[in-house]
Amino acid sequence: MIRESELIAQFTCLEHQVLLTWIEEGVLVPHRDEQGYLFDRVDESRVALACDLHYRMGLDHASLPVILSLIDQLHDVRHHLRVLKRAVAEQPDTVRAEITQRLVVSRVQSSD
Image (tube, rainbow, N blue to C red; front, side):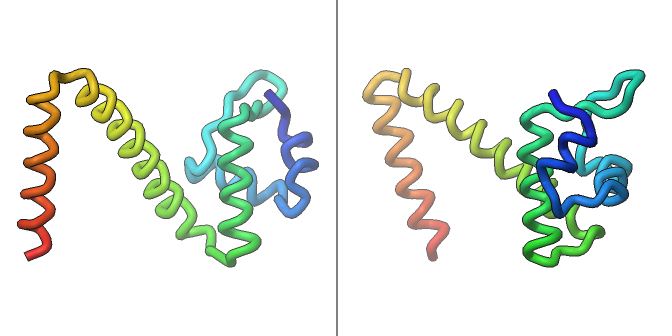
C-alpha cells in the first residue's frame, strides 16, 4: 500500500484536489488510517485509468463515475461468464451439447 504523496508522485498529471474529489465522489475507495489515505494496487490501477480518461482523453469529472461504474459492471460480467464457463465445462457431454444448441438457436432468433 502507498500513501497519497506516493500516488501523486507516481501519476505526475494527478492533482491533489482532483484525487480528493475522486475519493469524495466514490470513484476511489482507498483504505484510511490515522495518517491519511492508503492505496492498494487496485486503487493504483483505477487511478491510472481515471487519469487516462480525464487528463489524456478529456473526460469531464462528472462523467467519470458513470464510465468507471460501467467498466466495473463489465468486469463483473466477465467474472460471472468465466464461472459459468467452468461450470458448463464440468457437465456431461450431452448437457454441454444441449447448451451449445440452445445458444445457437438463441443467436439465430436474436438476429431475426
